[in-house]
Length: 284
Image 1 (cartoon, one colour):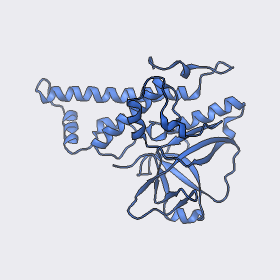
Image 2 (cartoon, rainbow, N blue to C red; image 1 turned 45 degrees about the vertical axis):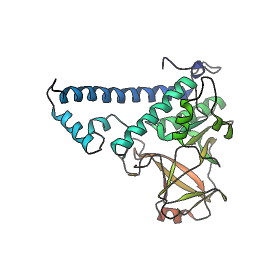
Image 3 (cartoon, rainbow, N blue to C red; image 1 turned 180 degrees about the horizontal axis):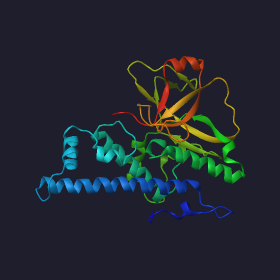
Image 4 (cartoon, rainbow, N blue to C red; image 1 turned 180 degrees about the vertical axis):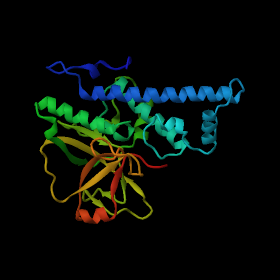
């Protein structure tokens, strides 16, 4: 965080730091810990292959995982949930660290890549906490209203554009996005067993041979005691397609992030029967 821009540390009238800056610091610590694990294991493995140190059982398992294009268990124990093979996992890690690094050096993004967080639940809690502080509301009375933004945002394209972007400049694609008064814009979610109909702005059946369609940018707007409209489908958002996880202290699966309310012309039972859900990341 030594390279962080000053705007991240601006405080409100009560001297409180932005909750999302706290979230950023926590995410940075988690990624730094993961990168240290990767670095130390790779250095040790290189020495073992060169015959400079004894090839331990742990190093042998890591080497075998590399041959099989699998993420070593030694790495997954310190990492975020993922079902990707090693090659895709590494590309995804580069995107995630780039997302965090850009946030540190350029300030808050116009739209947050929810797939890039170790702990996306903490990010959403930070958004609610900021809203509660700003309007002096009890945070336990806040929940999200989800407003669909008819724009698509691919994090790979964002990362590529940032590589050639001069310092203190803004992305051209940011101009296409609205600036919500409250809440945040979020992208990076995929639809499982359904798709988004851009013309009618509702959930529809998936197209043939399209397994996981991208969901447009979504405005997560904090509301006090918000009661969703009955025509909305309560789509659960999961970190991975496994959906299952261990039960947390809240009673939810650790793989579960949040329930996103999506407009639909079909009753909820229709989508429940199809097991329609949202995913933060795909398996490839």
